[in-house]
Amino acid sequence: MINFKFEEEYLTILQEELVPAKGCTEPIAIAFAGAKARELLGEIPEHIEIEASGNLIKNIRCVTVPNTNNLVGIEASALAGVVGGDSSLELEVISNIKPKHLKLINLLLLKNIVKVKLLKTNLNLHFIFKAKTKDNEIVIEIKNLHTNIVKITKNDKIIFEQDNGNDEYFGVETNRKNLTVENILEFTENINIEKIKDLLDLQIKYNMAIAKKGLNENFGVSIGQTILKHDQSIFSKIKAYTAAASEARMSGCSMPVITNSGSGNQGLATSIPVILFSRNLKLPKEKMYRGLILSNLLTIYQKSFIGRLSAFCGAISAAVSSGATFTYLSGGDLKQIKMTITNALANVSGVVCDGAKPSCASKIATGLDAAILGHFLAMENHQYNPLSGIIKNSVDETIFAVGKMASEGMKDTDKVILALMLEK
Image (cartoon, rainbow, N blue to C red; front, top):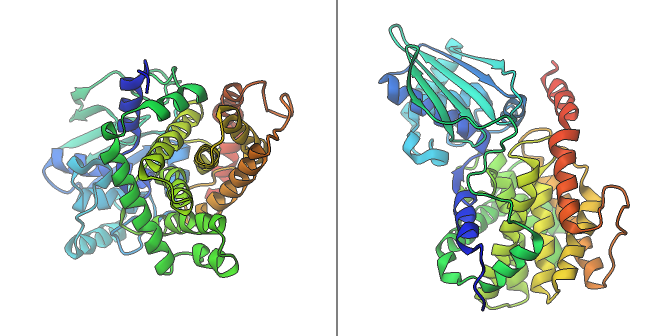
């Protein structure tokens, strides 16, 4: 092994982006702010007003809030945090909701104390949470990251403030400029696994557990069970387990997952396929760990150009990373890993995000289909030609191009999607 010059930087990036969460991270962000507001007020507010970016509204509107007996939406997310949340748990903020909390949440929903407005902002992840009692008002502003509080005021007096960053800032904390496919592979092959093993073990434990839950119980349209009913191959098993995990999570399952780049679905689609593929090949566990490192970093790399939220389906980025890792685990070299990414992005870089919901599971299965095909082609040394569509001369240029399309080119698409979703 050689010393990798960006080792500490890459390890920090993994620690930042692979974090546990219970439930879809967008409603959980609202719940986090709600819990923080109640803690600062010292009591349940009488009125709540939330101004949120379109992407947040889109990703919360249709998803079930965990531990709430199938409540859906921003209002339920806010009240879950206010009534039973613990902000110190961050993305696991509503882990401890009890039946007594649910009774009050439902009562407050009937009283219609939460109002939601669209926030005019250039950021995709941005909201302002206002909570009022008779005598006090707390205002919490969050930007870029789901728990990144940039400002808190109490009765118009600032009690906390940090640098908001500029409007183009995507919320990353550690420099991502040294991420390239080649650098990521070099880090993957040379890092001492012991330095990251505990986090990877947690990813394996959490994400495989919810996959099994999704397959053993009925969530949504039971996509995982349906896939396995018609095909028992390893690649169908990979699609079934990953999609089932997503479907359970989007349907309100309260089991934790390890996220990637702020998304549980991305965390699932980055890890479960790699775990199953490694086990099918009966690879040593260390090789599985290295595969997970590669897949996780490739997803983070792609998302660093796309941003936390977008009209582009983030699960596609994660599936592409898994496909590239199949090639790595099959003995493919750097050139073939790059081919896999290029082939997959040439196929499914147009899948849109129309909000978090159980059908995200189908998009994960579709992304994995493209990733598997990209892997097969690469192992035969086949790749789509450069300058074909948005495919560029190098894989890193292609990843940047997809990111630009997603973060800039799909802004109007995002607005139309939101308008369609809000139609009565």
